[in-house]
Image (tube, rainbow, N blue to C red; front, side):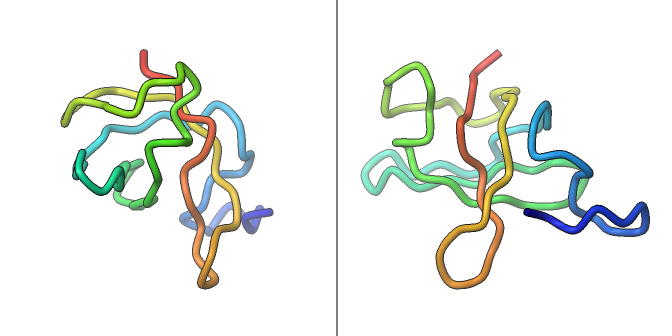
Length: 80
């Protein structure tokens, strides 16, 4: 779970985080979501609607979860 300190740049809760898709490579299925300057990588399989594509600039709701290589990643991504 992400740190919960108010001085942390990580969200207090892993739910109800909103951000914007700032990078997406459709061929690889990899992208990045920006949330208040914090950037969270994701894979297209994290899109809850079952699609494998998302537009650049799309506003999304997502959760933050521990991912591979010791980094936080976006998961359960819901296009708004």
